[in-house]
Amino acid sequence: DTEVTQTPKHLVMGMTNKKSLKCEQHMGHRAMYWYKQKAKKPPELMFVYSYEKLSINESVPSRFSPECPNSSLLNLHLHALQPEDSALYLCASSQVISLPDTQYFGPGTRLTVL
Amino acid sequence: EDQVTQSPEALRLQEGESSSLNCSYTVSGLRGLFWYRQDPGKGPEFLFTLYSAGEEKEKERLKATLTKKESFLHITAPKPEDSATYLCAVQGRGLAGNNRKLIWGLGTSLAVNP
Image (cartoon, rainbow over all chains, first blue to last red; front, side):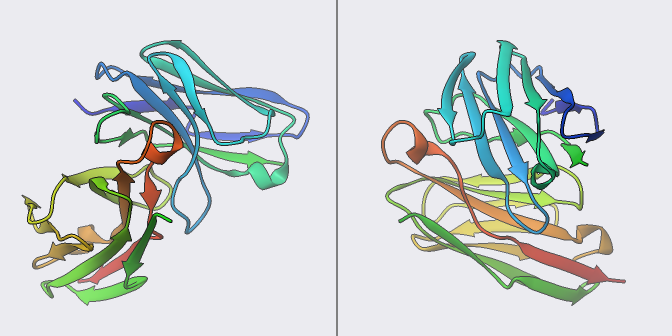
């Protein structure tokens, strides 16, 4: 089973709202990723967790706050977003990031910021 | 600088008309090359991982090949359901940290007409 699940599928929020995106995998993977994808562009890496520790932060604004409660779960907390943050947010997981391993993606959360 | 270029940008085929998509790369020591398929509004779906020049992998109507400079995704007798954007990404050897993230191409948008 190579399934990564994400909730919610769609999210509409105002610039003053606080919301969270959730991601879950049960493949025993120890690396999890958050990506942002704009239309007709490839995924853009935001954060990487390895063994539940943040290992890469691609200079993402602090209005995005990641959290990895355990090896199967990954959250992205959103606060005071801007309209330009509207995008498809993707979660992915892989076995170990120090190897040439494959990242498996979830279906994504379509976020609209009003 | 690591770079991935995909061509063509868009391709329209008739059902049954075989063709190839190209992914050219420059990377400081290839660790792996990945092919994904992405449907509109959904997360990328993993297709293949290639590790070394000369390697080939097949899945149904798709066959991926790898040389030292490029990879091809051959589509044999495509069907309308093969319509999607096909993304290529590479991971270089580099050092620990950001050098291990995926470098993405912009994708090839494939449309197969019945």
